[in-house]
Length: 453
Image (cartoon, rainbow, N blue to C red; front, side):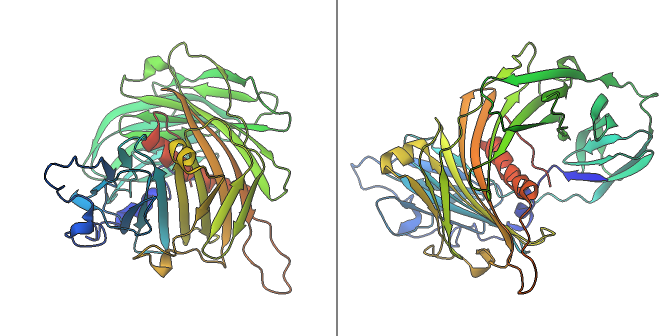
């Protein structure tokens, strides 16, 4: 059985973030002169203002200008919105943490040449107390709201969490191993209580055929393996059509015909190419996420690979050093630690804009939050867990394309004496990174790669 949750592992952190600590006077706000939004002296031009939007108030938010050493707490004019006044390059740290052992810590380094609004969502407190149930007579996948389920054996039943509201129901018919060939969209289903959709049979439904389409790239390397994923956003419901690896077909995908979609619906295709690096513990990946439109090109060009990259780590510190970079808009240094069942999960990352790196002239990036006031011990990485390090470059080449090139290094959990060491699972580690990259694309680009766990 295949199960995926579209709201994603990281998004689930936000459900417990709204603990009031983002209010003025607490770690998420300020009543005093260090709030960053005090009135300027008479006759002086106020410094430029940057707004940070987190939605749910974060567990901690601080900032500092690059020329200063002191971290400050920004003013919060409203819940989940913060303002800082800066005069040059600056850094912001946002901690999204729930009540359990899961945390996401993000540091953002930018200049005033970058956008003056930073969106770093800590998720949504929305609950899903309702159920949408039914039975599929064929193999396939179904989605409702932010959740989906798939099954290769037929017939099979589904029970999806749901919230009150209006959503589309999506069903894809076909083999989970080789691909789907038909789909159905039931529009604008209002749900205020549990909903039973009954039996779904492709022979009896107004199902439509998916459109087989082959994509190619002009700059693939000989050792790169290809995968693809398609994300359909239909009304308030999102669904993933999983990538199926067919070396002889490469990027052969099945698209939803644009005639079946509304103007507000979106269909985003992620084409991925991965290969091992010279270091056996490292893997490299490149991908492009393209918004599908009528008569769009099926030829793509991937971002160039990163040059040789090294990671050096201690319990609280990660340093990435690179030799060369492709043309990019933003770099992201990432570190994750997680238990085998993902019940314990910590994700730290450092986003550096191209303008910040150019102004600072750096060739390395460091993740280290030990000097941040208010940073709690439980937000640190657990050295007994499996870990991953990554450095990614992002670039938006057009309103429809978001490109990524990165390197990932796996760190298996330490093993007791007498037990053979276990190699970290690169596919699981890559899935964690994909979850975070989806969030980045959601708030920084027009294309979206949905998180999956």
